[in-house]
Image (cartoon, rainbow, N blue to C red; front, side, top):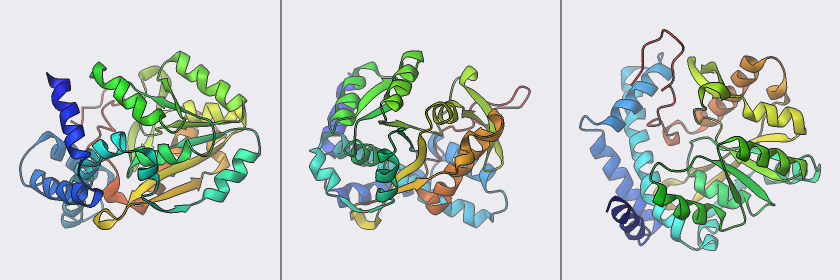
Length: 292
């Protein structure tokens, strides 16, 4: 029954124009900010720790705006999963860095797209999979019946999804060996054996080492990619930003720190659209109390 309700909600929200879903999301986000709930608690916890020098008023404002953007992201999912791909791509009003991506692909060494939990990452994935063969690393949803719906949505413009397991990592290496694109969420918590603790906005965060290992072995260029949500449902602005080559230099902690810094730079460009409700600091160093 649970999956039936979710699919129905996705179908219903897909009937809304983007401006309406964003307006409704902003209203629901403001409502969430007025009452105690898990989403507000996690958002507040993350923002307080990542911006300790901000005033209480500044942090509270970011909490409110973040909840608004998070609910916008939830309500736009129906459309981004179910609308024709061409309708979604037509809502991209601007693309910054497209020529840099094209040049990197021409090198033949492959390209790694690091797409953080910022803005509308579903839009970024659809656009980039039109630029060439692309393999996306993904974590299957907890609700197994949603897996096929998610795969169909993300693969409909040519991408191939690979699970976050050993087989999926091998698939990424092979794709880069063919000079193709691979896409990864750089700020998703890895398991204990696949990450190291490195600072993210000054807070120790369990950070993946996969991206630096892929780049070092393949020689692929790493780009940060995110789709900024424009005001009043006017569409999206896609940002493609080349990272520092030092991402592959030093020890694992140094490389993970540089990866987090690259994510930070994107977040600071649009802090409200980062998914602060994600439990980024769920795993703590040994002996440290839990955050949530």
